[in-house]
Length: 183
Image (cartoon, rainbow, N blue to C red; front, side, top):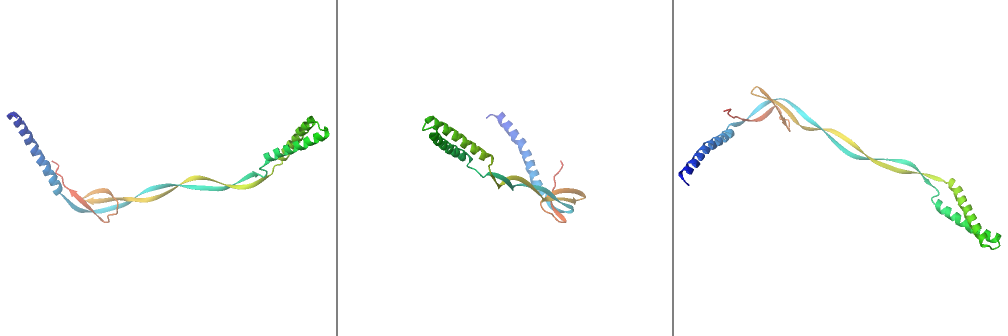
């Protein structure tokens, strides 16, 4: 390193050191230049906030319903057609003197009669009354006021200040006073 470089580095160190010590002095004085004091409380207002809670509630009721008393209607129709077909086939066999076409015609006519009988009975279906529970969910809101802190007004050396605190300080409030030079 030549002399010129040493001169530049030396100048930079000299410029930094006075600024650093002034900054350290300012920090030292800031800690020393604070103290505690008390002030007279002039007014305390509790601060509330509304808390709303939503909760589900199930509402149920009884609803009248009707059920078919003849739940086997389809089975009855098939049964009546089969019985009608067998009886019609036997009747056709006896009347038609053992002819196959008479048996078939009798079976078809007997099945048709059995079907018609089932349909007539279907028109007279019976129902029974019952009740079923029906439910759905509704959401209810519940609101309440909750203490959220205190707005405290106090006087210190002739001036009025306001702050917010989590507790009621009483008649006097403790303060930390810091003095900072303006220059």
